[in-house]
Image (cartoon, rainbow, N blue to C red):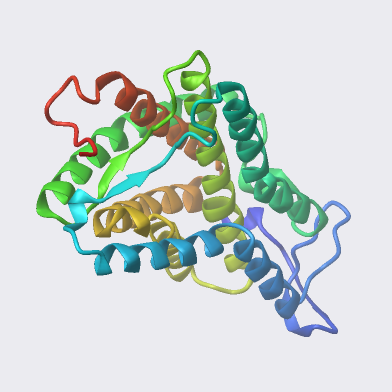
Amino acid sequence: MTRASIGSGRASDSDGPAGPTTGTAGGEPLGRRSLRTEVLLVLGVSFGASGLFALIRYLGVLTAQQPVRSQVARLNSSAAPGRPWLDLALQAASLATALVPVFLVVHLLGRHGGGPAVIGLDRRRPRSDALRGAALAAAVGGTGLAFYLVAWHSGANLTVAPSNLPDVWWRIPVLVASAAQNGLAEEVVVAGYLLVRLRELGWGDNRALAASALLRGSYHLYQGLGGFAGNVAMGLLFGRIFQRTGRVLPLVVAHTLIDTVAFVGYVTLAGRVSWIPVPR
């Protein structure tokens, strides 16, 4: 992201020493203490909390009396087995509530920071964003799959089961919606919002990038060390792209496409091709 697109001045308030303003287009300036508190609260109700739970789950994996790769990480599971309509309602509710952190950070950026346009969450360049996102997905998707297979065969990763949904009419639409929710929530919060706020707090780009990437890896730790390392690498790449372009939408498109191929590809190919690990 270009530096000029973020806060352009310095101000002080009763919360702490002078700090960068985050308010444009009518927003009020925030001091460093308020800014730090905001970031911690946002992470506390989103991916910071997810990282904590992932760490606890990983400790459970390590202390289980079975090899890591024989254990299963299930991503999209039935919420009401044998009751498809209730299951669908629960899936829809889960997807909708998982987007609340996105609306929260958009609201906060609107109050203090120039609105969603400051992270490139707008429709100014739809064609360019879509093409760049598709190209990024094509480049990253195959590499990510290869990394997972290597990690799984080495014993560093659990067996990841992207879907355990029943074979009913809404399975594919729910998987696509889940992929879109993942892409929107992770990229808006972990790439866009966090990197903007850390820069406003005075963090250098490299330090902020490392923090964002480590956060991304942390909430994938439930998949094993392979999931952690692979997502740290993805976070470094996606975060640097955001820092240089100031646009989060291509990252959302890329993440959505990567997850859609993974989820739909799994239900299509699992058990039919020998190289895809499946739960035993």
